[in-house]
Length: 313
Image 1 (spheres, rainbow, N blue to C red):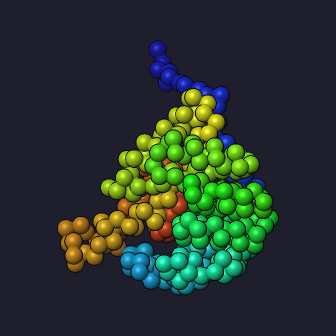
Image 2: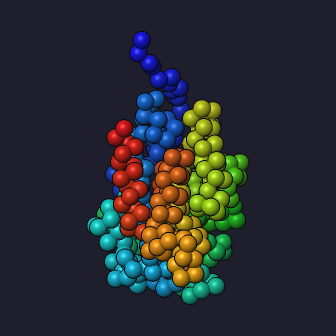
Image 3: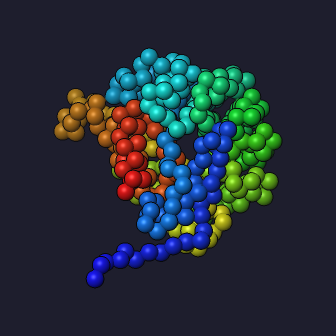
């Protein structure tokens, strides 16, 4: 007697969110991650490659070396990510606007965002410096400059979601809603954005990422609970695609960036951080991430192969 795999199907789905010109979509699945024997994932998880506007000179050599020819030029960086690394999205971080740093103006930031969006043929997400007040001003200017591009704007937080949500609504962009690692807080922010008038079909949820060894298990649990609530309980406010910010969090880890001279027992510092990013990203991919924000070209290539393998099973 042949063995039949038990199946648990669902009538519920993660919302399918169109990005950019609409040719790229995220979400739409009616199964838990890669349970393709139970349903479908019409859109594969996407890799968004980080691009910074402030020439991050403090990065360790392991990640700075492959990017050395573009670190000071966000447009060239974005084009390289698209043309050479196969990025599905560009994740532009307007770090230069941080009031505790260069404190660049919203107008300067908007000019950079527009230049990046016009230089590539893939969708672009734009994250501010995560200063609550400044991000509101910056992303309003970016929303206006990027009209017609359907950018993903964020992070929209509890303290500035009205400003960012209104800008996205007014200029027809998508919103990345970010909350601390907690399902109920994430649901509440989605509700608040919806009450503001933002279409729930234009929201992606960023539940905050913890890297390997630095809270990964908490993020995994929240993402898993999100998917279960969305698909098994038909909870409309958890049916948004999920975003995992793997690159930045992975490279914050001491184990990823400590010089081998300081920690010789940890091995080659030119490989450690790449492995840290791969493990963080693939773990959250299995947890339910629909968009992975990534940094190192080698990590990006490896995780793309993982996605190819899982989709082809």
